[in-house]
Image (cartoon, rainbow, N blue to C red; front, side, top):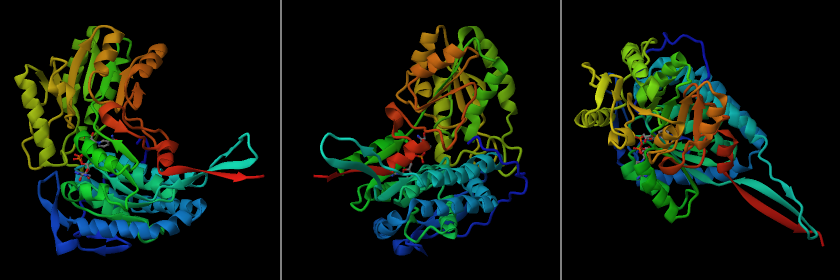
Length: 492
Ligand code: NAD
Protein backbone atom coordinates (compact mmCIF):
# COMPACT_ATOMS: atom_id res chain seq x y z
CA UNK A 1 0.00 0.00 0.00
CA UNK A 2 3.01 2.25 -0.10
CA UNK A 3 3.25 1.95 -3.86
CA UNK A 4 3.23 5.18 -5.78
CA UNK A 5 1.76 5.78 -9.17
CA UNK A 6 2.19 9.33 -10.37
CA UNK A 7 -0.48 9.31 -13.04
CA UNK A 8 -2.98 12.06 -12.37
CA UNK A 9 -6.28 10.98 -10.90
CA UNK A 10 -8.11 13.89 -12.46
CA UNK A 11 -9.05 11.87 -15.54
CA UNK A 12 -11.12 9.35 -13.57
CA UNK A 13 -14.81 9.69 -14.30
CA UNK A 14 -17.78 8.12 -12.60
CA UNK A 15 -18.38 5.01 -14.76
CA UNK A 16 -21.57 3.59 -16.22
CA UNK A 17 -21.76 0.13 -14.75
CA UNK A 18 -23.54 -2.68 -16.52
CA UNK A 19 -25.70 -5.08 -14.47
CA UNK A 20 -23.53 -7.86 -13.08
CA UNK A 21 -23.87 -11.61 -13.52
CA UNK A 22 -22.24 -14.53 -11.76
CA UNK A 23 -18.98 -15.82 -13.20
CA UNK A 24 -18.94 -19.61 -13.06
CA UNK A 25 -16.80 -22.00 -15.09
CA UNK A 26 -15.72 -19.16 -17.37
CA UNK A 27 -19.33 -18.24 -18.22
CA UNK A 28 -21.41 -15.22 -17.22
CA UNK A 29 -24.87 -16.23 -16.06
CA UNK A 30 -27.83 -15.13 -13.98
CA UNK A 31 -28.48 -16.42 -10.48
CA UNK A 32 -30.94 -19.23 -9.83
CA UNK A 33 -34.45 -17.77 -10.20
CA UNK A 34 -32.89 -14.67 -11.81
CA UNK A 35 -32.77 -12.75 -8.51
CA UNK A 36 -30.67 -9.56 -8.28
CA UNK A 37 -29.77 -6.93 -5.69
CA UNK A 38 -28.98 -3.22 -5.94
CA UNK A 39 -25.58 -1.60 -5.70
CA UNK A 40 -25.58 1.90 -4.20
CA UNK A 41 -23.17 4.79 -4.81
CA UNK A 42 -22.23 5.86 -1.25
CA UNK A 43 -21.45 9.41 -2.32
CA UNK A 44 -25.02 10.01 -3.51
CA UNK A 45 -27.07 7.20 -2.00
CA UNK A 46 -28.48 6.36 -5.42
CA UNK A 47 -28.64 2.94 -7.05
CA UNK A 48 -26.02 2.56 -9.80
CA UNK A 49 -26.71 -0.96 -10.95
CA UNK A 50 -27.75 -4.39 -9.73
CA UNK A 51 -25.92 -7.70 -9.57
CA UNK A 52 -26.95 -11.34 -9.41
CA UNK A 53 -27.97 -12.61 -5.98
CA UNK A 54 -26.50 -16.09 -5.87
CA UNK A 55 -28.39 -18.92 -4.22
CA UNK A 56 -27.17 -22.24 -2.90
CA UNK A 57 -27.38 -24.02 -6.26
CA UNK A 58 -25.19 -21.28 -7.76
CA UNK A 59 -22.64 -21.95 -5.02
CA UNK A 60 -22.83 -25.67 -5.85
CA UNK A 61 -22.16 -24.87 -9.51
CA UNK A 62 -19.25 -22.57 -8.68
CA UNK A 63 -17.64 -25.16 -6.41
CA UNK A 64 -18.17 -27.84 -9.07
CA UNK A 65 -16.52 -25.61 -11.68
CA UNK A 66 -13.57 -24.94 -9.37
CA UNK A 67 -13.22 -28.68 -8.66
CA UNK A 68 -13.33 -29.52 -12.36
CA UNK A 69 -10.58 -26.97 -13.06
CA UNK A 70 -8.38 -28.02 -10.15
CA UNK A 71 -6.45 -30.96 -11.60
CA UNK A 72 -5.43 -29.04 -14.72
CA UNK A 73 -4.39 -25.91 -12.85
CA UNK A 74 -2.55 -27.82 -10.12
CA UNK A 75 -0.63 -29.73 -12.81
CA UNK A 76 0.33 -26.53 -14.66
CA UNK A 77 4.03 -25.92 -13.92
CA UNK A 78 4.66 -23.10 -11.46
CA UNK A 79 6.61 -21.21 -14.09
CA UNK A 80 3.62 -21.25 -16.44
CA UNK A 81 1.24 -20.20 -13.67
CA UNK A 82 3.68 -17.39 -12.91
CA UNK A 83 3.54 -16.18 -16.51
CA UNK A 84 -0.25 -15.92 -16.31
CA UNK A 85 -0.14 -14.13 -12.94
CA UNK A 86 2.35 -11.60 -14.34
CA UNK A 87 -0.08 -10.98 -17.19
CA UNK A 88 -2.82 -10.36 -14.63
CA UNK A 89 -0.65 -7.60 -13.15
CA UNK A 90 -0.14 -6.15 -16.65
CA UNK A 91 -3.87 -6.16 -17.43
CA UNK A 92 -4.68 -4.63 -14.02
CA UNK A 93 -2.34 -1.74 -14.85
CA UNK A 94 -3.64 -1.45 -18.41
CA UNK A 95 -7.22 -1.28 -17.11
CA UNK A 96 -6.37 0.80 -14.03
CA UNK A 97 -8.74 3.64 -14.95
CA UNK A 98 -11.71 1.25 -15.08
CA UNK A 99 -10.71 -0.38 -11.81
CA UNK A 100 -10.20 2.94 -10.04
CA UNK A 101 -13.53 4.26 -11.28
CA UNK A 102 -15.43 1.09 -10.39
CA UNK A 103 -13.92 0.70 -6.94
CA UNK A 104 -14.35 4.39 -6.11
CA UNK A 105 -17.97 4.34 -7.23
CA UNK A 106 -18.77 1.17 -5.33
CA UNK A 107 -16.93 1.85 -2.05
CA UNK A 108 -16.89 5.66 -2.10
CA UNK A 109 -13.12 5.46 -2.03
CA UNK A 110 -11.26 8.64 -2.99
CA UNK A 111 -9.56 8.18 -6.36
CA UNK A 112 -6.45 9.74 -4.81
CA UNK A 113 -6.19 6.63 -2.63
CA UNK A 114 -7.66 4.06 -4.99
CA UNK A 115 -5.12 4.26 -7.79
CA UNK A 116 -1.86 4.16 -5.81
CA UNK A 117 -3.14 1.89 -3.07
CA UNK A 118 -5.98 -0.39 -4.18
CA UNK A 119 -5.18 -0.82 -7.85
CA UNK A 120 -1.39 -0.69 -7.77
CA UNK A 121 -1.22 -3.01 -4.76
CA UNK A 122 -3.44 -5.46 -6.61
CA UNK A 123 -1.00 -5.51 -9.54
CA UNK A 124 1.94 -5.84 -7.14
CA UNK A 125 0.39 -8.82 -5.39
CA UNK A 126 0.02 -10.72 -8.65
CA UNK A 127 3.63 -9.88 -9.53
CA UNK A 128 4.88 -10.86 -6.10
CA UNK A 129 3.16 -14.24 -6.07
CA UNK A 130 4.12 -14.85 -9.71
CA UNK A 131 7.72 -14.71 -8.53
CA UNK A 132 7.08 -17.09 -5.63
CA UNK A 133 5.08 -19.51 -7.81
CA UNK A 134 8.34 -20.55 -9.43
CA UNK A 135 9.97 -21.75 -6.23
CA UNK A 136 7.39 -23.81 -4.36
CA UNK A 137 9.90 -26.42 -3.33
CA UNK A 138 10.00 -29.24 -0.84
CA UNK A 139 13.03 -30.41 1.10
CA UNK A 140 15.07 -33.57 1.39
CA UNK A 141 15.51 -34.89 4.93
CA UNK A 142 18.29 -37.04 6.36
CA UNK A 143 16.93 -40.00 8.34
CA UNK A 144 18.81 -42.88 9.99
CA UNK A 145 17.32 -45.67 7.86
CA UNK A 146 18.19 -46.54 4.27
CA UNK A 147 15.57 -44.36 2.64
CA UNK A 148 15.28 -41.29 0.47
CA UNK A 149 12.94 -38.89 2.25
CA UNK A 150 11.58 -35.67 0.84
CA UNK A 151 8.64 -33.32 1.17
CA UNK A 152 6.35 -31.95 -1.48
CA UNK A 153 4.28 -28.78 -1.11
CA UNK A 154 0.97 -29.39 -2.81
CA UNK A 155 -2.02 -27.14 -3.40
CA UNK A 156 -4.92 -27.67 -1.02
CA UNK A 157 -7.74 -27.72 -3.58
CA UNK A 158 -10.76 -25.44 -3.86
CA UNK A 159 -10.51 -22.25 -1.80
CA UNK A 160 -13.55 -20.27 -0.68
CA UNK A 161 -12.35 -16.64 -0.62
CA UNK A 162 -14.77 -14.46 1.35
CA UNK A 163 -14.02 -10.75 1.42
CA UNK A 164 -15.28 -7.60 3.20
CA UNK A 165 -16.51 -4.29 1.82
CA UNK A 166 -13.62 -1.99 2.64
CA UNK A 167 -10.75 -3.07 0.36
CA UNK A 168 -12.49 -5.27 -2.20
CA UNK A 169 -9.66 -5.41 -4.73
CA UNK A 170 -6.74 -5.74 -2.34
CA UNK A 171 -8.32 -8.29 -0.04
CA UNK A 172 -9.54 -10.49 -2.87
CA UNK A 173 -6.16 -10.45 -4.60
CA UNK A 174 -4.43 -11.15 -1.28
CA UNK A 175 -6.23 -14.49 -1.39
CA UNK A 176 -6.60 -15.23 -5.09
CA UNK A 177 -2.99 -14.41 -6.09
CA UNK A 178 -1.26 -16.74 -3.59
CA UNK A 179 -3.98 -19.38 -3.98
CA UNK A 180 -3.47 -19.49 -7.75
CA UNK A 181 0.31 -19.29 -7.43
CA UNK A 182 0.20 -22.47 -5.34
CA UNK A 183 -2.09 -24.26 -7.82
CA UNK A 184 -5.47 -23.97 -6.07
CA UNK A 185 -8.75 -22.93 -7.64
CA UNK A 186 -11.09 -20.38 -6.11
CA UNK A 187 -14.71 -19.49 -5.46
CA UNK A 188 -14.78 -15.81 -4.52
CA UNK A 189 -17.70 -14.31 -2.63
CA UNK A 190 -17.26 -10.54 -2.40
CA UNK A 191 -19.12 -8.44 0.17
CA UNK A 192 -22.72 -7.65 -0.74
CA UNK A 193 -22.03 -3.93 -0.22
CA UNK A 194 -19.22 -3.79 -2.76
CA UNK A 195 -19.34 -6.57 -5.37
CA UNK A 196 -18.38 -4.67 -8.54
CA UNK A 197 -14.58 -4.91 -8.75
CA UNK A 198 -14.74 -8.70 -8.25
CA UNK A 199 -16.69 -8.91 -11.51
CA UNK A 200 -14.24 -6.67 -13.32
CA UNK A 201 -11.37 -8.78 -11.98
CA UNK A 202 -13.06 -11.89 -13.40
CA UNK A 203 -12.84 -10.24 -16.82
CA UNK A 204 -9.22 -9.27 -16.20
CA UNK A 205 -8.19 -12.74 -15.04
CA UNK A 206 -9.78 -14.21 -18.15
CA UNK A 207 -8.08 -11.66 -20.42
CA UNK A 208 -4.75 -12.57 -18.78
CA UNK A 209 -5.25 -16.25 -19.56
CA UNK A 210 -6.51 -17.74 -16.28
CA UNK A 211 -8.38 -20.84 -17.50
CA UNK A 212 -12.14 -21.23 -17.11
CA UNK A 213 -13.21 -22.47 -13.69
CA UNK A 214 -9.96 -21.55 -11.94
CA UNK A 215 -11.61 -18.44 -10.44
CA UNK A 216 -15.39 -18.21 -10.01
CA UNK A 217 -17.29 -15.26 -8.58
CA UNK A 218 -20.60 -15.56 -6.75
CA UNK A 219 -22.10 -12.25 -5.70
CA UNK A 220 -24.68 -12.52 -2.97
CA UNK A 221 -25.49 -12.28 0.70
CA UNK A 222 -23.36 -13.95 3.33
CA UNK A 223 -26.46 -14.60 5.41
CA UNK A 224 -27.96 -16.60 2.52
CA UNK A 225 -25.02 -18.47 1.00
CA UNK A 226 -22.14 -18.03 3.48
CA UNK A 227 -22.73 -21.15 5.55
CA UNK A 228 -23.40 -23.20 2.44
CA UNK A 229 -20.11 -22.13 0.87
CA UNK A 230 -18.02 -22.52 4.03
CA UNK A 231 -19.41 -25.97 4.87
CA UNK A 232 -19.49 -27.20 1.27
CA UNK A 233 -17.88 -30.64 0.97
CA UNK A 234 -16.22 -29.50 -2.26
CA UNK A 235 -14.41 -26.61 -0.52
CA UNK A 236 -11.01 -27.52 0.94
CA UNK A 237 -9.96 -24.24 2.55
CA UNK A 238 -11.70 -21.11 3.78
CA UNK A 239 -9.92 -17.77 3.48
CA UNK A 240 -12.11 -15.25 5.28
CA UNK A 241 -11.71 -11.54 5.91
CA UNK A 242 -14.44 -9.68 7.75
CA UNK A 243 -15.79 -8.85 11.17
CA UNK A 244 -14.92 -10.83 14.26
CA UNK A 245 -18.56 -11.78 14.85
CA UNK A 246 -19.08 -13.24 11.38
CA UNK A 247 -15.58 -14.74 11.34
CA UNK A 248 -16.21 -16.50 14.64
CA UNK A 249 -19.37 -18.03 13.18
CA UNK A 250 -17.69 -18.98 9.87
CA UNK A 251 -14.78 -20.53 11.80
CA UNK A 252 -17.18 -22.68 13.79
CA UNK A 253 -18.85 -23.88 10.59
CA UNK A 254 -15.50 -24.57 8.88
CA UNK A 255 -14.10 -26.08 12.08
CA UNK A 256 -16.91 -28.60 12.27
CA UNK A 257 -15.69 -29.89 8.90
CA UNK A 258 -12.02 -29.62 9.96
CA UNK A 259 -11.26 -27.29 7.07
CA UNK A 260 -8.05 -25.28 7.15
CA UNK A 261 -8.84 -21.59 7.37
CA UNK A 262 -7.34 -18.16 7.64
CA UNK A 263 -9.38 -15.67 9.63
CA UNK A 264 -8.54 -11.98 9.10
CA UNK A 265 -10.92 -10.24 11.47
CA UNK A 266 -11.61 -6.92 13.14
CA UNK A 267 -9.12 -4.54 14.69
CA UNK A 268 -8.93 -1.58 17.05
CA UNK A 269 -5.30 -0.54 16.98
CA UNK A 270 -3.58 1.68 19.50
CA UNK A 271 -1.30 4.42 18.26
CA UNK A 272 1.10 5.50 21.02
CA UNK A 273 2.77 8.91 21.01
CA UNK A 274 5.68 8.96 23.48
CA UNK A 275 7.09 12.18 24.87
CA UNK A 276 10.22 11.72 22.73
CA UNK A 277 8.28 11.62 19.44
CA UNK A 278 8.87 13.99 16.53
CA UNK A 279 5.57 15.75 17.12
CA UNK A 280 4.97 17.10 13.63
CA UNK A 281 5.55 13.69 12.04
CA UNK A 282 3.51 12.04 14.79
CA UNK A 283 0.44 14.25 14.23
CA UNK A 284 0.59 13.52 10.48
CA UNK A 285 0.77 9.78 11.13
CA UNK A 286 -2.04 9.90 13.69
CA UNK A 287 -4.35 11.67 11.24
CA UNK A 288 -3.41 9.30 8.42
CA UNK A 289 -3.98 6.36 10.78
CA UNK A 290 -7.57 7.24 11.50
CA UNK A 291 -8.82 8.84 8.27
CA UNK A 292 -7.15 6.38 5.86
CA UNK A 293 -9.92 4.83 3.76
CA UNK A 294 -12.40 7.04 5.67
CA UNK A 295 -11.58 5.11 8.82
CA UNK A 296 -12.87 1.88 7.29
CA UNK A 297 -9.52 0.23 7.74
CA UNK A 298 -9.09 -2.90 9.86
CA UNK A 299 -5.54 -1.79 10.55
CA UNK A 300 -6.45 1.83 11.20
CA UNK A 301 -5.29 3.56 14.38
CA UNK A 302 -8.48 4.78 16.07
CA UNK A 303 -7.13 4.63 19.67
CA UNK A 304 -4.60 7.35 20.32
CA UNK A 305 -2.55 7.04 23.51
CA UNK A 306 -0.55 10.16 24.34
CA UNK A 307 2.10 10.76 26.99
CA UNK A 308 0.49 12.93 29.69
CA UNK A 309 3.03 15.73 29.20
CA UNK A 310 1.97 16.06 25.53
CA UNK A 311 -1.75 15.41 25.90
CA UNK A 312 -3.04 18.99 25.64
CA UNK A 313 -0.58 19.86 22.87
CA UNK A 314 -1.56 16.85 20.77
CA UNK A 315 -5.30 17.33 21.30
CA UNK A 316 -4.91 21.00 20.34
CA UNK A 317 -2.93 20.12 17.21
CA UNK A 318 -5.61 17.64 16.16
CA UNK A 319 -8.35 20.21 16.77
CA UNK A 320 -6.52 22.57 14.41
CA UNK A 321 -5.57 20.11 11.68
CA UNK A 322 -8.37 17.54 11.38
CA UNK A 323 -11.13 19.89 10.11
CA UNK A 324 -8.87 20.78 7.17
CA UNK A 325 -8.54 17.24 5.84
CA UNK A 326 -10.38 17.47 2.50
CA UNK A 327 -13.70 15.64 2.62
CA UNK A 328 -15.98 15.31 -0.38
CA UNK A 329 -16.62 13.71 -3.74
CA UNK A 330 -14.39 10.63 -4.09
CA UNK A 331 -13.92 11.49 -7.76
CA UNK A 332 -12.32 14.85 -6.88
CA UNK A 333 -8.56 14.16 -6.87
CA UNK A 334 -8.12 16.48 -3.87
CA UNK A 335 -10.46 14.42 -1.66
CA UNK A 336 -8.90 12.48 1.21
CA UNK A 337 -12.06 11.49 3.10
CA UNK A 338 -14.96 10.11 1.08
CA UNK A 339 -18.31 8.80 2.23
CA UNK A 340 -18.70 5.75 4.42
CA UNK A 341 -19.45 2.74 2.22
CA UNK A 342 -23.10 2.47 3.25
CA UNK A 343 -25.88 3.64 5.53
CA UNK A 344 -25.32 0.75 7.99
CA UNK A 345 -21.67 1.77 8.44
CA UNK A 346 -22.59 5.42 8.96
CA UNK A 347 -25.30 4.52 11.49
CA UNK A 348 -22.79 2.47 13.49
CA UNK A 349 -20.47 5.48 13.71
CA UNK A 350 -23.37 7.74 14.73
CA UNK A 351 -24.34 5.31 17.48
CA UNK A 352 -20.82 5.25 18.90
CA UNK A 353 -20.45 9.04 18.83
CA UNK A 354 -23.82 9.43 20.59
CA UNK A 355 -22.63 6.96 23.22
CA UNK A 356 -19.38 8.90 23.63
CA UNK A 357 -21.39 12.06 24.32
CA UNK A 358 -23.57 10.19 26.82
CA UNK A 359 -20.46 8.91 28.60
CA UNK A 360 -19.01 12.38 29.00
CA UNK A 361 -16.53 12.22 26.12
CA UNK A 362 -15.36 15.60 24.84
CA UNK A 363 -15.92 16.02 21.08
CA UNK A 364 -12.77 17.91 20.13
CA UNK A 365 -13.75 18.20 16.48
CA UNK A 366 -16.36 16.68 14.16
CA UNK A 367 -19.06 14.47 15.61
CA UNK A 368 -21.80 14.86 13.02
CA UNK A 369 -23.12 13.42 9.80
CA UNK A 370 -22.33 15.83 6.96
CA UNK A 371 -25.37 17.65 5.62
CA UNK A 372 -25.31 16.40 2.02
CA UNK A 373 -26.46 13.40 0.02
CA UNK A 374 -24.56 10.17 0.56
CA UNK A 375 -23.05 8.68 3.69
CA UNK A 376 -20.54 11.28 4.86
CA UNK A 377 -19.38 11.69 8.46
CA UNK A 378 -17.06 14.39 9.77
CA UNK A 379 -13.61 13.25 10.92
CA UNK A 380 -14.05 13.16 14.66
CA UNK A 381 -11.74 13.35 17.66
CA UNK A 382 -13.07 12.40 21.11
CA UNK A 383 -11.09 13.02 24.29
CA UNK A 384 -11.49 12.13 27.96
CA UNK A 385 -13.43 8.86 27.68
CA UNK A 386 -12.86 6.17 30.31
CA UNK A 387 -10.59 3.33 29.15
CA UNK A 388 -13.37 0.78 29.44
CA UNK A 389 -15.89 2.77 27.37
CA UNK A 390 -17.30 0.68 24.51
CA UNK A 391 -16.36 3.59 22.25
CA UNK A 392 -12.72 2.91 23.13
CA UNK A 393 -12.98 -0.86 23.30
CA UNK A 394 -15.11 -1.69 20.25
CA UNK A 395 -14.25 -1.42 16.59
CA UNK A 396 -16.12 1.65 15.27
CA UNK A 397 -14.81 1.44 11.69
CA UNK A 398 -15.21 5.08 10.74
CA UNK A 399 -13.21 8.32 10.83
CA UNK A 400 -13.26 8.53 14.62
CA UNK A 401 -10.28 8.86 16.97
CA UNK A 402 -10.41 8.51 20.74
CA UNK A 403 -7.59 10.05 22.79
CA UNK A 404 -6.34 8.73 26.13
CA UNK A 405 -3.34 9.66 28.24
CA UNK A 406 -0.66 7.53 29.89
CA UNK A 407 2.11 8.07 32.41
CA UNK A 408 4.74 5.37 31.98
CA UNK A 409 5.81 3.11 29.12
CA UNK A 410 4.33 0.16 30.99
CA UNK A 411 1.00 1.93 31.23
CA UNK A 412 1.07 2.72 27.49
CA UNK A 413 1.68 -0.93 26.66
CA UNK A 414 -1.05 -2.08 29.04
CA UNK A 415 -3.58 0.32 27.51
CA UNK A 416 -2.52 -0.62 23.97
CA UNK A 417 -2.95 -4.32 24.72
CA UNK A 418 -6.12 -3.68 26.70
CA UNK A 419 -8.70 -4.62 24.07
CA UNK A 420 -9.77 -7.98 22.74
CA UNK A 421 -8.28 -7.13 19.33
CA UNK A 422 -4.72 -7.54 18.10
CA UNK A 423 -4.34 -6.73 14.42
CA UNK A 424 -2.08 -3.66 14.20
CA UNK A 425 -0.39 -1.22 16.56
CA UNK A 426 1.95 1.71 16.22
CA UNK A 427 4.18 4.05 18.12
CA UNK A 428 5.88 7.36 17.69
CA UNK A 429 9.31 7.74 19.29
CA UNK A 430 12.77 8.94 18.36
CA UNK A 431 14.29 6.50 20.86
CA UNK A 432 15.51 3.44 18.98
CA UNK A 433 15.72 1.18 22.01
CA UNK A 434 12.18 2.09 23.03
CA UNK A 435 10.92 1.42 19.48
CA UNK A 436 12.20 -2.16 19.55
CA UNK A 437 11.30 -2.74 23.19
CA UNK A 438 7.69 -1.61 22.84
CA UNK A 439 7.21 -3.24 19.41
CA UNK A 440 8.11 -6.57 21.00
CA UNK A 441 5.54 -6.11 23.80
CA UNK A 442 2.56 -5.07 21.67
CA UNK A 443 0.01 -7.79 21.02
CA UNK A 444 -0.53 -7.28 17.29
CA UNK A 445 0.25 -8.91 13.95
CA UNK A 446 2.02 -5.80 12.67
CA UNK A 447 3.62 -2.84 14.44
CA UNK A 448 4.50 0.42 12.74
CA UNK A 449 7.02 2.88 14.11
CA UNK A 450 6.92 6.57 13.15
CA UNK A 451 4.38 6.20 10.35
CA UNK A 452 1.19 4.28 9.66
CA UNK A 453 -0.15 1.88 7.05
CA UNK A 454 3.26 0.89 5.66
CA UNK A 455 2.18 -2.25 3.85
CA UNK A 456 3.66 -4.27 1.03
CA UNK A 457 2.90 -7.69 -0.46
CA UNK A 458 6.20 -8.91 1.02
CA UNK A 459 5.23 -7.99 4.61
CA UNK A 460 2.87 -10.45 6.32
CA UNK A 461 -0.05 -9.16 8.35
CA UNK A 462 -2.81 -10.79 10.35
CA UNK A 463 -4.26 -10.96 13.79
CA UNK A 464 -3.79 -12.25 17.29
CA UNK A 465 -6.57 -12.57 19.88
CA UNK A 466 -10.00 -11.67 18.45
CA UNK A 467 -8.42 -10.31 15.27
CA UNK A 468 -8.07 -13.86 13.97
CA UNK A 469 -5.28 -16.14 12.85
CA UNK A 470 -3.20 -16.85 9.80
CA UNK A 471 -1.28 -14.34 7.74
CA UNK A 472 -1.87 -12.65 4.40
CA UNK A 473 0.93 -11.29 2.23
CA UNK A 474 4.48 -12.55 2.19
CA UNK A 475 5.65 -16.14 1.72
CA UNK A 476 3.54 -16.94 4.80
CA UNK A 477 0.35 -16.49 2.78
CA UNK A 478 1.64 -18.69 -0.03
CA UNK A 479 2.52 -21.40 2.48
CA UNK A 480 -1.04 -21.29 3.82
CA UNK A 481 -2.33 -22.32 0.39
CA UNK A 482 -0.14 -25.44 0.31
CA UNK A 483 0.09 -28.57 2.38
CA UNK A 484 3.12 -30.67 2.96
CA UNK A 485 3.32 -34.29 1.92
CA UNK A 486 6.25 -36.46 2.99
CA UNK A 487 7.51 -39.19 0.67
CA UNK A 488 9.85 -41.85 2.05
CA UNK A 489 11.33 -44.35 -0.42
CA UNK A 490 13.12 -47.38 0.87
CA UNK A 491 16.59 -47.83 -0.54
CA UNK A 492 16.94 -51.35 0.87
P1 NAD B 1 -18.68 -8.81 7.52
O1 NAD B 1 -18.16 -9.74 8.54
O2 NAD B 1 -20.02 -8.23 7.67
O3 NAD B 1 -18.67 -9.52 6.07
C1 NAD B 1 -17.49 -10.08 5.54
C2 NAD B 1 -17.86 -11.13 4.50
O4 NAD B 1 -18.48 -12.22 5.16
C3 NAD B 1 -18.87 -10.62 3.46
O5 NAD B 1 -18.53 -11.12 2.19
C4 NAD B 1 -20.16 -11.26 3.95
O6 NAD B 1 -21.11 -11.45 2.95
C5 NAD B 1 -19.64 -12.59 4.45
N1 NAD B 1 -20.54 -13.33 5.34
C6 NAD B 1 -21.60 -12.88 6.05
N2 NAD B 1 -22.19 -13.91 6.71
C7 NAD B 1 -21.47 -15.02 6.42
C8 NAD B 1 -21.57 -16.38 6.80
N3 NAD B 1 -22.52 -16.83 7.60
N4 NAD B 1 -20.65 -17.25 6.31
C9 NAD B 1 -19.66 -16.83 5.50
N5 NAD B 1 -19.53 -15.54 5.09
C10 NAD B 1 -20.42 -14.65 5.55
O7 NAD B 1 -17.55 -7.67 7.39
P2 NAD B 1 -17.65 -6.29 6.59
O8 NAD B 1 -18.57 -5.37 7.29
O9 NAD B 1 -17.83 -6.54 5.13
O10 NAD B 1 -16.14 -5.78 6.77
C11 NAD B 1 -15.68 -5.06 7.86
C12 NAD B 1 -14.98 -5.95 8.85
O11 NAD B 1 -13.91 -6.64 8.23
C13 NAD B 1 -14.35 -5.15 9.98
O12 NAD B 1 -14.55 -5.83 11.19
C14 NAD B 1 -12.88 -5.13 9.61
O13 NAD B 1 -12.00 -4.95 10.70
C15 NAD B 1 -12.72 -6.47 8.99
N6 NAD B 1 -11.54 -6.48 8.13
C16 NAD B 1 -10.46 -7.21 8.54
C17 NAD B 1 -9.31 -7.19 7.77
C18 NAD B 1 -8.09 -7.96 8.17
O14 NAD B 1 -7.17 -8.07 7.38
N7 NAD B 1 -8.04 -8.51 9.36
C19 NAD B 1 -9.29 -6.47 6.57
C20 NAD B 1 -10.42 -5.75 6.20
C21 NAD B 1 -11.55 -5.76 6.98
